[in-house]
Length: 206
Length: 108
Image (cartoon, rainbow over all chains, first blue to last red; front, side, top):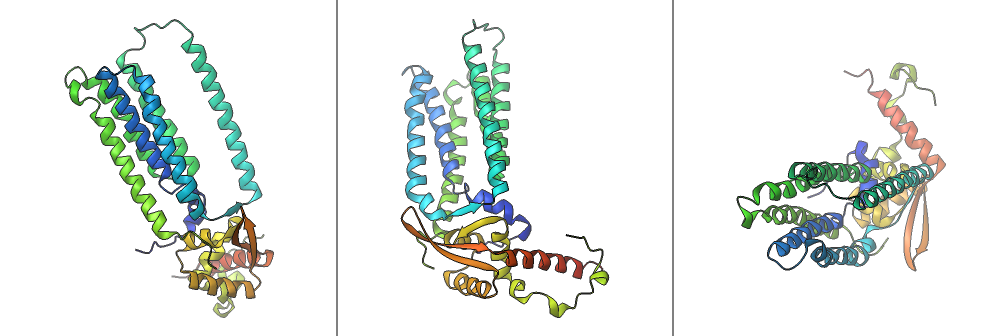
């Protein structure tokens, strides 16, 4: 199928083409899968979920870097952005760095404080998960100009609250939602990656 | 640039529309190059959905008109054919889009 080009959307398409190769989706899918697996293994008594998470999430990054360095980057081609775009990109990255540093400092500060468990009940943890997944995915969708990341934000918001509120009744299936969401994002990413590979030659033959 | 009010004010004969840009494939190439400093053939091919043959033919026409510049560069030891929109090409594309807009402004 030949994709029609909409002149009004060309600028958006140029920028999103730099990231829209399915690798970020695959990373996200594998990350959610790893998260679900670590919670499941912790439930089954194989250790603490945070420790297992390291071993289940690292492969996701290995797959991501192998894909971008060996498969997608050689096929993407080269683009040099205009000076004003480069400047706004640098400004945006700078703001993001400040924001991330502030979050890191706040996180460190609060982690050193004595924990009052009554405040961190199921509802507040779920709300934090939902808002952060929606906000982070929306920031990614807006900056990378990839609209489906808004949907990912909504999808990723589901599994953690689902687990919290179903584990008391259906303990066995409470982590299942992580795997369902991971599978959806993973399949979506693989389809985009296959389309990208099919539509792009590896070498410049002009 | 001054904003023109209507096609009556501009009084553009249809024959004066830039035929080099008016062809859809060349328009796509020009529009893509308009937003960047330069772009290589692989990126442009993917953005425009053209074949290698079509891309080569249309870029040659645009180069002959002086609208784009073609440069062979080695980036990370690999050859890349880079396309750059010239000043003449940028002005021509802006004039073309304005003319097209005004041409149909009072139509229907």
